Amino acid sequence: MPVVVSEGAILLENLRTAYVSESNGHARYEEFAAKADGEGLHGVACLFRAAAVAEHIHADNHRRILQQLSGETEFTPHPVTPGNTLENLRTAVAGEVFEVDTLYPSFLERARQCQDVPMERTFAWALEAEKAHARLFNEALARLELEDEESWITLADGFYVCPGCGYTIEPEHEADMCRVCDCPRSRFGVIR
Image (cartoon, rainbow, N blue to C red; front, side, top):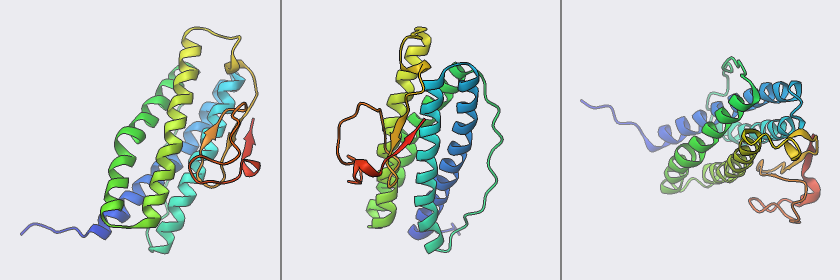
């Protein structure tokens, strides 16, 4: 007789998977930031730190819902062995693209089908932030591959991160509100 898994169990497992993924992303990007700083790529290090903060925000958003549903929030992070910054950027791009193209769209669709508004919101917010990360990591990768050391990749200029959803923007971005969760720009953290 086949085992029938409830929609609630699938949603809970999706949320746990997203929580673990974001928590591991946070740890990975912290290590990648230290490596980039050591290579004199301070702008890339700032981007990795900003993404680490955003991943932590996503993990916290997911964790809060997991706790409300009595889901498991204990986990052991995967060990991180950073390569050089070029390799780390390629790893980051691949991870973000997977989340944008595969992970979050499927989780978001399931949450919508089940009309689970809190999960739908946490997945949608994370998806939009991951799109920004993929774009920024791709830009940094292209500049590093072109050896464009006169660009922002060597400067510790910083990035802004929304405390509600983790959306990450460049310093020259002009918006007054987060385009994802409507948080005022004045509440964004500057990550250097």
